[in-house]
Image (tube, rainbow, N blue to C red; front, side, top):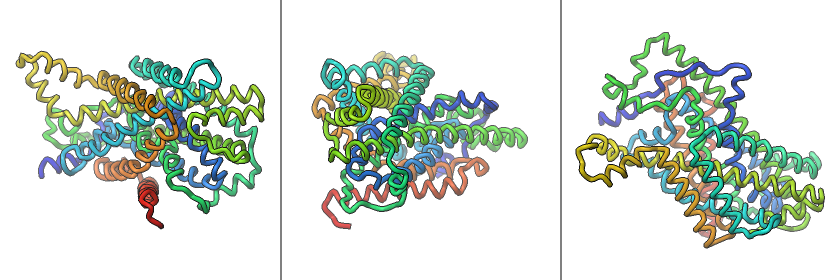
Length: 486
């Protein structure tokens, strides 16, 4: 019981640098662009044109709701990291109940989602490049995964941030320019804002789209890692409850001078505002891309009665766009789609690698601690080498990037090849998993953060609505899956 009370102690970081001011704040918006490019590849490029082709603008309102709720959700996980100096998984570890139950609840489904998502995006990338250049789908899918992996394991966050920022800018420009070229009448687009469900609504068809709108469950948690890597509010800190000298298992907050506490609170609130703006940039940019691809689907595919399937997804889009803009439109979409997908693979490998490395060290924390105590006293050199590697978070991140987001996805790709089939599995997993992430984070921020730095009632209300929204979709999907009427 004592251990449980200690794990529920209020937590916050012990210090924070001065927040940037003026134009310097723009240097801190990189994680929003990384998150944006990670969020649009599968949901926007693949599923959104399919939705637009089948339902035109009938589900635009649903996309706008999810886009808004995604800002609330990623802002909430970023909030926790700014205030505590800890990643969101470190927070999940300390939730009451059986040891590490929440980590396992996150870790296992996301392993499946990581493999199938990267495999599906690679399949789509290959299908886009093979229609414009010599070579086949397998060649380009493999090359894209390997080149992205090399950049990720280089260990240079600044390089990843710069690369994805450039990709994000190009993608937004291409998507918006293309959509403007075929823009529908305003009243037609505006009609899609009014909530309503088409008569032939197919939940099995739309669930992957809903799950992948702006990255889904994985993207929510990744934002915490990119906020931590960029050091919003300061660098990641050691566990306050366990590693502060003289703390004796209590929150370090009670030892802070009152004046210092007020200054720290003031700084962290400013960091939170910067983080919130960063999250908004990522969501708005990703939302514009989603709306643009819905317009492409409704205006170019729906009149032809084409719902892209299999490896013909990119071919259908480029062929129809070339009819509008000729050769320029053809190459414009090829470049835009390739940038979106390659950037998504890059940021997915980085985001999942960081998250899985963190989860592994949390799950193996007792063994890693014991190995440090026995270091130098155990003659088993192999065991020492294994634990030394497991203690190295960068090595773990790269290992997961290699195996879970490169080798295993390539195996799945060569077995299936169809990006729609592969990504549909990932979309269902992330739709079902999103309410788990939402309610765990909501509980965490209401219990562990100091009252002065907790998200307000606005965030509380919309986090609850987010969880209920995705829970409802998950329930409806399973009812439909088992042939039950509702």
